[in-house]
Amino acid sequence: MRSEKPYKRTERIEHQLLEILGEIKVRYIDLSHLGFITFTSAKITPDLRMAKVFYSVLKPRLDTEEITAGLNLLKGTFRKYLAPELHIKNIPELTFYYDETIEYSEKIDRLIDTIHQSSNDL
Image (cartoon, rainbow, N blue to C red; front, side, top):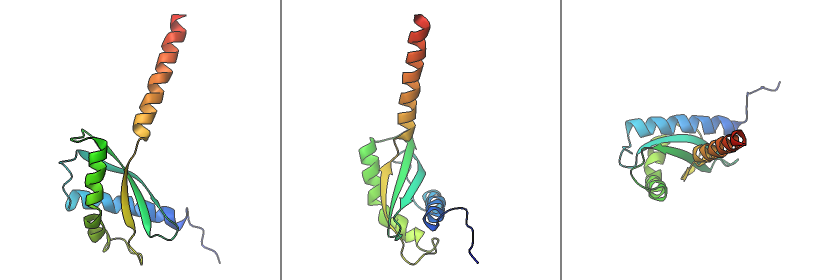
């Protein structure tokens, strides 16, 4: 008998990873010196050893590269708090990346608005 799960194991772990990282950020690690950080998505390798964690930031206090560097300096601390919560054999190595999708969608919206305005002017 085959169990029908809603999605793959890696996807389930990615969702779980995001939830746990959010809790760690609130409970144990103060990131206020960087801005208001939100973890938006995670991609984990099939062997569950490496994870890319994407974040966005509201009211940044530093530029994006410095925030990314700051988060990557804290990846060992995140793993320390992640280990008891994430129940898998190997806790993945974390690498943080800035999520550019919000900025990209805003840029597309602005372009569409300018096209609509220019077509209305004709």
